[in-house]
Amino acid sequence: MDQNRDGFGTGIEAVITSFNQGTMILEAVESLCTQTVLPQKIIIVDDGSTDGCSIRILKDMEKKADLPVPVMIHYQENGGVSSARNTGIKKTQAPMVLVLDGDDKLEPEYTEYVSQLLRDNPSMVAASSWMHTFGILDSIVCPAGGKINSFLSCNCCPATHILRRDIFEQCGGYDESMRSGFEDWDFFLSMLETSPEAWIGMVDKPLIRYRTAPASSNIKSMDKRLELMRFLIEKHIGSYHDHIVDALLGIEAISNSRLFHWENEVTHAIANHQELSRSSEDFLESPTYGDGGMASAVRIASIGGEK
Image (cartoon, rainbow, N blue to C red; front, side, top):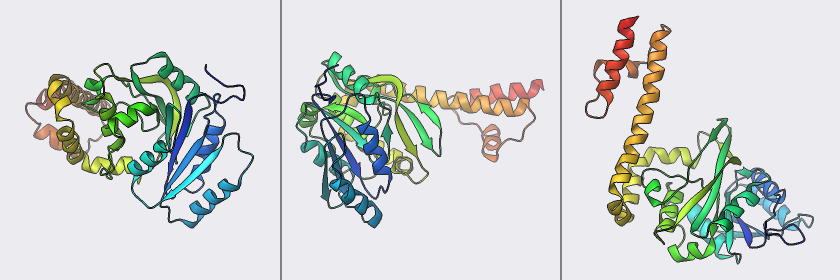
């Protein structure tokens, strides 16, 4: 591992975005300050916080002199997370930049393992790891990374990642017009379009602690999923054109997987004489056609007939 004698990872700086984060920003900073390989600097971009407590916490942090990593705080008017990330990354000088949301945190080995993955693979434009969610949902989420054909069907990388700053400059950064979600997915597509060999790596360990809440921007963006996907497809139409088969088959695989899991839940309920939901009963009375729905309904009815 490329470290200097003080334990700092040479060539890595961190950017944390913050908006009314309260004490959560302290947890994010602490997780960076306890890395096995420390970043050289932490840049916090406050995107126009209006909460007095959040602002006071940031002001107090500016006065702290005992942090193991230098912390710089930049205040700006609210421009959205894409604007905040662009601002922070442009203030870095290191060849690698760690991007972290202010309400999430990292396991101590994150910087060490993920940056080493980038150092070992020159064609890798960014890298991250699996996630351990906490808050409302306690689970392990395993994004796979990959080349651009993998990213056309769904986003395969967490928002928290380490990127190569020269690739950020080459692709133009985050799209600041995107304030309803999917800005990470769009950014990864833009980075992957910089070279045919470009890919995003993944450490297969849950090194990100991802906070979940019903009102999070990630959850709210699902309400506009089709609208946002249309924007992505039209913006990256060249990539979708070149990889149309992979894109369509990827979406079909996701659809089939969800149908399979739902079918298993329904057959389990029938086998255990449990009441089905109204939506499941409606589906069995009038299954969809041409998408595997009718075949699924037949299999379910067969299980019911055996009972």
